[in-house]
Length: 133
Image (cartoon, rainbow, N blue to C red; front, side):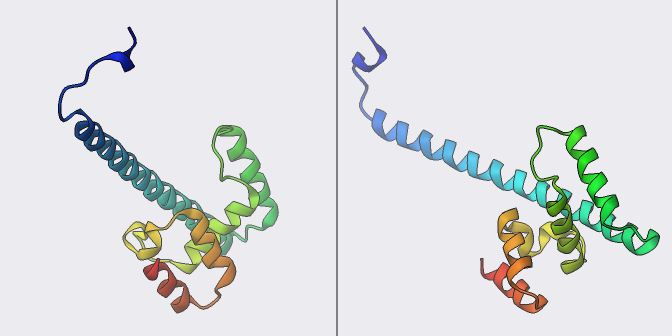
């Protein structure tokens, strides 16, 4: 006798749907928390790079090295490429006020943020699209 052969009590389908909804909602909330933390991390990395470039004259080669060293330290982590570090820098330059996660852009997935940085060069437009999304 398999689990599929069991006679189910009344209300089981409704219970299953309720639990599936709970699981989906919890997964969505967890995803949002992870996204918020990731955006905060990316903003802090970008802000640090921006500060060092302004204060110490860092150039592209330092960012190349930083990317390589971070990827070596965290090989399982995606998002530490040279180009992504430049996006992080642009992110911090475009939205300089902390905490970034309380702004509309802080609720967007990283891919959406990079599209805003690539496609729009006017900050009020970026803010409008971030709020609209």
